[in-house]
Amino acid sequence: MKDTINLLNLTQESLNNFFAELGEKPYRTKQFMQWVYHKDQLDFNQMLNLSKGLREKLSEVATLELPNIAKQIFSLDGVIKWVIDLGQNNHIETVYIPEKDRGTLCISSQVGCALACTFCSTGAQGFNRNLTTAEIIGQVMVAQLYLSNKGKRISNVVFMGMGEPLLNEKAVYDACDLLLDDWAFGLSRRKVTISTSGVVPALLRMADTTPVSLAISLHAADDVLRDELVPINQKYPIDELMAACQNYLTAGTQERHILFEYVMLEGVNDSIRQAKQLAKLLKGVSAKVNLIPFNPFPESQYKTSKTATIEAFQDVLFNNGIRTMTRKTRGEDVDAACGQLAGKVVDKTKRTQT
Ligand code: SAH
Ligand code: SF4
Image (tube, rainbow, N blue to C red; front, side, top):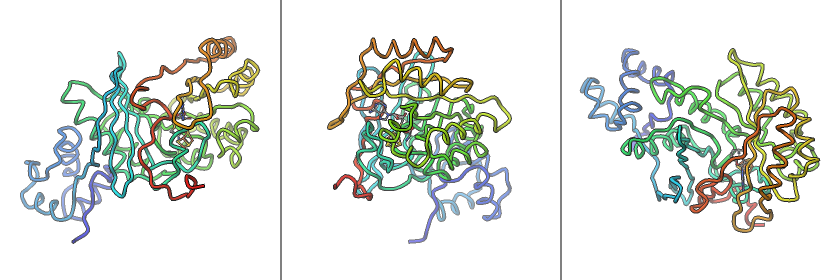
């Protein structure tokens, strides 16, 4: 069989090159993107303003292939989870979270995750491979196809599903490019968020590569505890991470902020002393804090902090002038809450076998 290219992998710039190689004029790119991203048309033969010859050529050399949906699961609170089958016994998960004034899609960037944070279900599974841009964008398309029929829309996209986006840079940045492109999804840079556990060299590159928003999974304000909870901290400690954050805040032409995520683990990172430590670390940083009540999963070793503890922690931050909100747990009944995503992964790191 001849090699074909899945055009969901290509940004506008790459599509321009692709059509140029076929001897086509640049305006073809925009016509094509309108069909795919604005009219949800994935059949080349139905793209009626492309010449018949071009449609035939596209069918020969290219595809528009969405990932396969293995399951679509509806939670009682309106959350929808798609389990996506990537073949070879690998599954990823994508979650839609409707709110009053917006609809957030939480997407995956890798099959599993190699970083093994101790409180994360994905991390407990090991890692198989990076997703392609088409597999990342495919998650948005799958959700959009379903939601647009129901009169709902995706207003925000967050890379907070399975995987560490900054260990899959090229595919993630190209996907961000398409998410922001008016000829594709046309989202504003504030509505697309990359969440990272702190891969510092990639974070330094990200600052100059894509204008999307940034969330940092901090979870502890001291290195001893963070080394334990987020093992990548042993490689890139908090002072290096905060320097990379400052670099992100001053790069780019528009005003930037950072969202710091902090999972609330009972008796581990939720004391008043630790809240004060966090406030001190974030002093002078253009930051917002998101406290995430820990979502348990089978074999997890932690408990969720008590509501009163979370409130007291939040008060310390408030009193230090730090904007803080506690994330509402959604989709818990279908294991779709933060950190509960664990599509089947064929672990190549051998971690799950030890
Ligand atoms: N790898 C990236 C993005 C995916 S995780 C990162 O770590 O940022 C998305 C968010 O869910 C992160 O803030 C992560 O720390 C949080 N999370 C992971 N496991 C969790 C759990 N069991 N309960 C609550 N939040 C969790
Ligand atoms: Fe990976 Fe993020 Fe889970 Fe850590 S929290 S194991 S980086 S997915």
